[in-house]
Image (cartoon, rainbow, N blue to C red; front, top):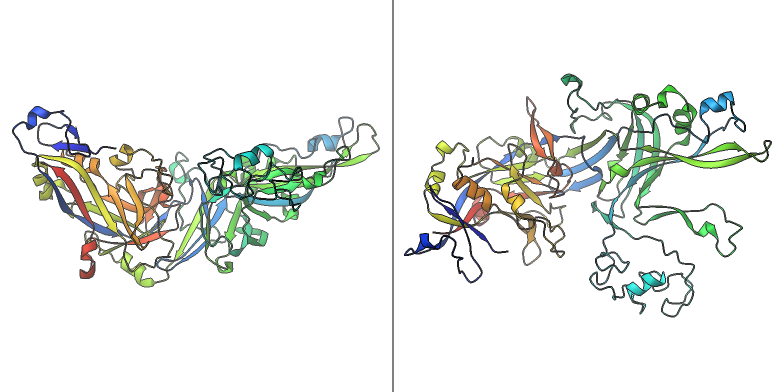
Length: 603
């Protein structure tokens, strides 16, 4: 991509493209005849400010966090999930309504005696099955994801051939009979429908164990704000925890958990005598993507759901939410064997109730059969993700909270959902009337080749410290992206684990020893708008984020004597990671890492 140059003057603006050989296109050529073009680079001050810790919006988020991290800098971060539940209006259990069972107004209708056998809470992981070469092996397991003729299990049968043969490309002996696939003539025992997944958004030790508790919620979560005549969305913040406030009902689960990232296969319970060549008990009846699957108290759901068939409590979603207000999902922080933090796909979370009921055989009215069924309660209603941070070092919290407005910081502490930074370009003030540097720059005849800000990572940070991998620079006043964000489209550099908007920047770069070094942002268009279009030199915000493509705006509260809501990038809430950056007023040993704005120009 050829860099774009911008010409700055009082009356005329145009763009000139310059190639690698430094030859200019003839656009505007006559204006330069007889004049000499001089290239240069100049650095300008960037003033950084530490913003105080926040309470961020807990509802309206697309995902949910669950787990615990003991960060060596920021301390313990933990998260719990509080969610309302939804059901279909007026559900029927079994084949007949409860009214029909009670009145027996039809033939072959009697009491079905529905009874719960098992209940599971299912919390799916985020997964992907990207298969670039289409050979049936996802990229993360493929020895060469760009070559369908690669042999990932080294059994001398290519991946694409194994897909065609219905054998396992990730096992040299698909059916486990001791005969390798390259000479085995019968692999029928292998289930070719088995799926393999890559699991995303898991931080820490994936093999850590912990204890998961599920409670009934006794607090009603409002969709709309009663203080605004129910005309706007109710905003909940992470410092509003119904669990700590005591809105806790019955205990529904208290289970040890070890994560399993394999596809969940539930086999048929009995063999079909009509298929003598296949034993159905070895075949999957149900397949589920990898997820946390926790058994819940069946007695509770018998009493509160199935036994309420035909009641007013289940006649609509609204009545149901008043009756059964929700659940609290909490991983006991002290129970973790190691750090483990998960971002879960809660839009697919559910409670699955397995039950049996009696059915009269239509061929023999005296015969009663037992049928099996299931009922789904969706965990995708109004949801709160309560984040809690316990500092490991009180000095950091004191340092952040004692930061003074307008006083540049020597370091900036950044952590998703808690600490964030701000910066001002050229001057400490954002009022252009006080900004002499800007007035001088606007008088220059400059072609802006490129403008960059580089933030250096504090070298004292431990290398393995749940370091943020991406930062985001935005308009602090509105929470919106800078114009440069839109200029740079998503990239296709698959060698970068986070390639989207790579030229805009904010991606952690390592030094030659693989130590965390810096974050770089290209803000060429933003600087052009300030210098040429007299755009306001707004204050910029700096946060750690989880998804560069998520531009949604949430709310956050500045925690002070009078909490003040601000617009805050939603993606910064969905991220437990952090970093410490060298600011604009560092100690003498870090002066060479001081943050600055670099403008490369032609005059």
